[in-house]
Length: 224
Ligand code: HEC
Image (cartoon, rainbow, N blue to C red):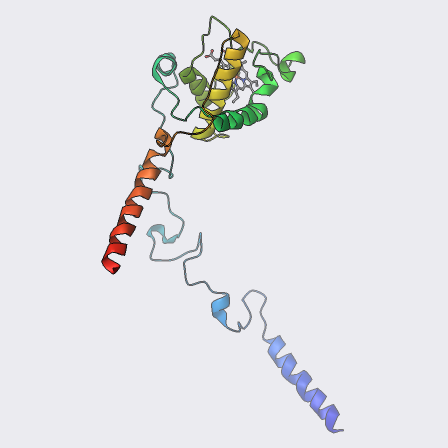
């Protein structure tokens, strides 16, 4: 008899707890700091922000870390300028060439062919026309022009600026230059190992790393 009463009591307590639940609101939270973050929620709605919204546009003129503006215009003049003066800031090493080869296989070979002679699968199947060979004398491509057409695209060839990083594009440039040299029967050599002067693309990052290192040194000295 006593146990029946106990059961009834327990059921009543449980029911009274459950019956207050509202699906539209979170239920009782045990240790709520596990659920409620201290920081602002992304896209949350808070009056302290302009427009009351946590998500804001980046400050005008800000760029992602490591991103460099490309100053050559998407025009004939820009193309010619890049062709004549733009130089590869990434070192010519066996490693970079190997990476360029892999990326070339992913993005370019389907049209330009594994050898760069303009006879990729899509050309053989007549899906696309007018793919040139890299040793085309009339085009006389250079490192700058290869980079430029990858950045903006050219006629029926699309841009690769969204799929590839700056460094990756320059690695592809190295491999295209190698294919061109092979087609022309000319030698193409790269260094086996990178030389320790930092490449221009990473100058910014390296400068900062150096600053940190110097800072560290001074702190250490003070401690002694
Ligand atoms: C969808 C097929 C296609 C793909 C993929 C493709 N290209 Fe092209 N590419 C073309 C065509 C077509 C042309 C000729 C465009 C023209 O001048 O009319 C061309 C031209 C070029 C030229 C010569 C441009 C000049 O200065 O005259 C280079 C260099 C080149 N492509 C490099 C690349 C590289 C590097 C990739 C990979 C990142 C690539 N292409 C991917 C179709 C393609």
